[in-house]
Length: 609
Figure 1 (cartoon, rainbow, N blue to C red):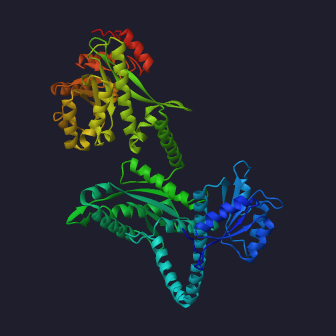
Figure 2 (figure 1 turned 90 degrees about the vertical axis):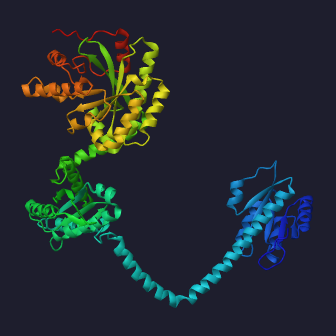
Figure 3 (figure 1 turned 90 degrees about the horizontal axis):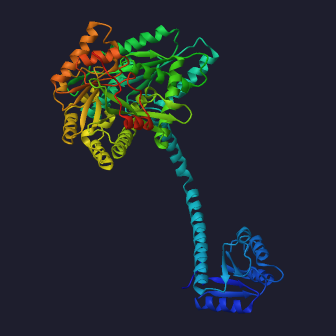
């Protein structure tokens, strides 16, 4: 293969080696391939030869008398005529090759003796092609520079157009594309200016409103995003009508808006505007030939001397809005410092909860279910507990709601089901427990929303080989009303698998009496709140009795939760309640304690009439 330089001549290679045999071998090898070759037996000769006729590439032996290869290479790199010529070092295998030094003095590669002809040729060809490419790039740069100079006048005009475009882009960058309102970036800038003005003159008070549409997702899901976008524009138009000259209405994204109210003397001034907004939203939006009603939850943050950053006002207004949503939506809340503390605690809890899933910090505890007729153990309810590495055992009340809202309840719930089924099967294999003993496990609303729910359950039952007729899945009333048609189909498929179903915490959520007869439920669980208050008045007692009679008429057994006294247990027994659980019988037990209980299988409570 013949390598040609940019001058369309054969590549010239200088070989520097104090060993004539090496020179002869390399020269013959390269000449056969079409290269022009110069040879030098010493570094001094090489330097003179290279200055007289600069080669395209240099093969340089390292170990030579007088100047070694490193010194020669440094001198090459110090001369203007040779500084850009690639140098490939030559070294024998038994010699010490200082690769770092070789590259530091300017070498681009190295070849070891004895020579492999193909290796030598490939390395030379690669570096010659690289050198040629560098020269081409240099020529291209010269041409490009010339073109740039020629177009200087044109560029001046283009720069002017570019500046105009930048102004347009700046406007786009600071405004919401859909509504044309200021976006978060512009709002923050104006908040900073307002805070700066307030610091200089505390009389110039201002407030921030954080507004979030309630149930906006329903509009998008039912009427489509196009209608949702038109609704957002209509909302923005109405909000503008409620503001004064100088106030800033911004859209943060989604269905969230923010208002900066300037020149506020007192909180009542803010509340007047909030009430005006609420009044405007009472009227329907007419879109797609139908009336659409929308409400907003509003958080309010008033500036004070404690604020040092504009973002903190927005953060606190957001925290107040979140409290308004939790209070029942379609209302407002004024920020209080404890809201921020609660938000921080919640953030830390979410973070710790994510780590807990990754680190498998959860444990399953088992609360016994007791027959109110015989006092004997009839089953266990599997309850999740969090063993925090620093805080110890964390109460479910501190993390279950967060797990539900974040969606963490899905992996946690399926883990509990798998773990509990595996443990129950282990008990069956090692302890002679009754075949009718049941294992109750809670399923959340979000678990029911998973499209692969049945696949998960089938997989767990298959892996653990537990009898499906001993598994009882507990579902709250909200699951039933979330999507009645699809839920009924899932219930029917679970029933076909012989899995037992229970309504948990009955009566605490929605009134679902009219739904009960439509689902193949096996058990109804009376919430502890009814049990605690049933002996306080005949009305409360009558409610519990009605629930028990209703369940029996629908062919369901009844379990009472939260039984704490023998009087409660006897009263429930007399009303026909079959089972109960609570601290009267046992608190939730660890695996070890539950195993010990099964081994003893005692009569936990003997009821007397």
